[in-house]
Length: 253
Length: 299
Image (cartoon, rainbow over all chains, first blue to last red; front, side, top):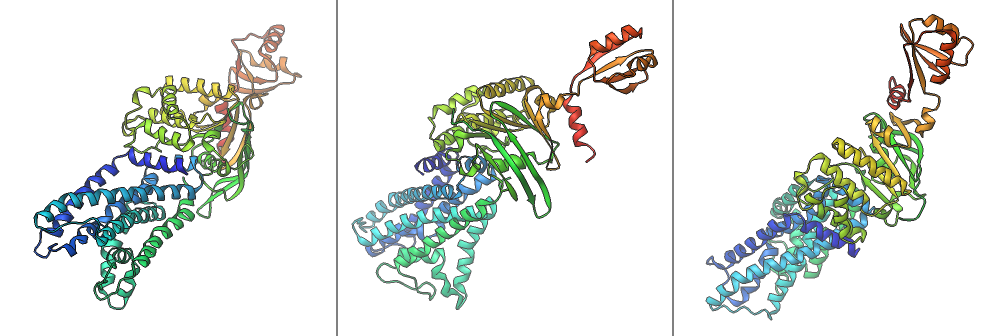
């Protein structure tokens, strides 16, 4: 398994997608810091400082790592490198497991980069406004740990969606429409919106914001932090397992 | 060299696509170590589907295929047992040739310098750090071959490896295949270029419409198929002289016949004794192409 994971990292490093998505992550992290501080209703007090570090995972910026995960499987089908991959490793479970671990670690690395970008822009700026940033603060730590967890899981969610759908364009489009459009529509419909806490965004919000007092989103109460983790884990593992068991097992012609 | 037993056995293999297309139909044959087996058939005969079933990429509808007695999917370390080059398009266009092989080395736990050694072997040394995007068909074929040979496998399966190679490349490939067979490896090569196969293969398996039409060594297939072309201005006298001899005579044109069952020397002697004037007396060797067309046409 270690060899397979090393090979997956080598696959990732030897193409260019990781680089462009990393640049985008840095840029988005910096822009989100600006968006959290610059407006009049931005961060104006120490209690709001955790928002700076939760913003990457809380905004649709996680799409970047989701897409990276989707591409981790679908480019193999697009360029038929799945043939040598499967010839070398006939077990689809081994392939999917190695990719899940690889993209979870990669997601955590991207989360670290995004947090660094937010800190690089945000910390000196807030200090100049006499708002101190304490990394020892438990809410700041919660936001940082939550970001690592959420972004790593979105790497696996992307991978699972890719394994399930196999087609690159379809998987990316379906994923983005679901995460950004459908979930928000869901949240706007009475009654149906009670399902929202169990969506990827609902789980994410629970992980990031149910520390201390949980504010309802559009009248819907969030789950607890650990329930949110379970929700995201299900979204991460169910598609990956279905993909490994069903679609990845189809004939490779 | 890995453990012995590199025999490929295809046993009653059938693949039905989409409920009614029988791509491969109750196919059985075996491929022996230490020889080159040509896998022949017209386009759409089911060659690639068969190879993909042997390699565990396509699930058979019924029947099974084994390598050294084991289905491909159960091989403990496939890269070191079977090397396969299936199609020249299985590369990420933005990845370099060297990185493609280094990824395979990592999975198979081979030293990274195997990648460079294989690139040298197939003549891609200078293109090692170039992206596959810019590779010609022939270069992709060479890279496929490098990937297939990476783990020094006992069994080598190549699908149309000569496609896109120039005449020098084809000659080089032939030498390489011969070398692999001499080392005791099992070499299975699919092709539609019959004369290429005839020159290099020890055995052939001929497929048409997913069914086996003929399998055997070139020697077996050619046994009794040699004939002698005899041209004479007086065929009538030749027919008279051949009466009672254990031969078959078929007309070729008004001045020539094809005779089977007698050597050119025997025929020459017979004609000389009978005083028949000959204008040509030539041995017609076994022609795989002719056999192939006779077996695969009109079905």
